[in-house]
Amino acid sequence: MKDLYVRCVRLVRAVLGRLGVVALLDRAARRSRTALWVRSWLAVYDLDDMLRLDVPWWTFEAADGVEVLLRQRPGARVFEWGSGASTVWLAARAGSVTSVEHDVAWAEQMRRVLPANAELRVVEPVRRPGGARSAKPGFEGLDFTDYVAALTPSDGLFDVVVVDGRAREACLDRALDHVAAGGLLVVDNVDRARYRDALARHGQRLQVEWTRGRTPALPYPTRTALVRVRPADARAA
Image 1: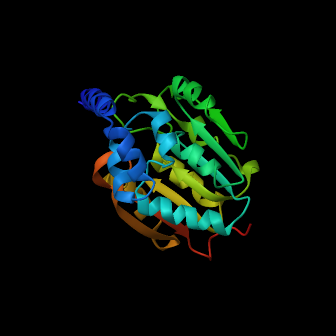
Image 2: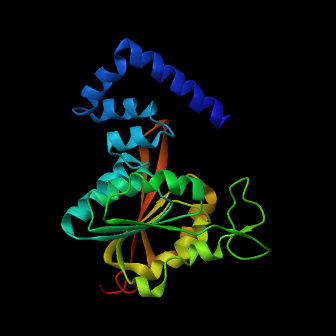
């Protein structure tokens, strides 16, 4: 169904492009967030187009929150599970970005667009019992333990940590000790109950801001969580 939707969108975009509508939307998108949102529908699963629009694939509200934090922290360090348009968007606003990717083919597409201050670590899952699992269909029997552990103690603390890849529950647990004091943990797609449950397991340690609303490339609202580790538990930078 997803592939059919993407093919339909690309067909519509080709027609609108010939009619000059895409160019009109591009101009409007520079002035209006609503126009940007509508224009981004035509960029679904198109990395180059998403990069031209300069948007991460989270709610606009979540992106605004992250951008405010990064403005306040020149040279900020960012760590991210799951590379994509957000990697380049973050690198344009932070001092450095380290992104972990499980998909070799996608990583090759990403490498051609990464700026100098972005590092991409490729860690493929291993087929074996146990370990960190992904509940996404098609990943049954794969262990993402090494992928989760790509964030190592020697990496230190980060101003922003993004959980937007595979095995997100395990990545969330790993991330908590690597968020600098006053920093943000971004957990995307918290429409899914398993991600909300993973956050709830940590109880009062976390202060969660639930953003819900317009999201680039999607004509319906989604949810992204902006999470702060409470000061008593946050590690000083």
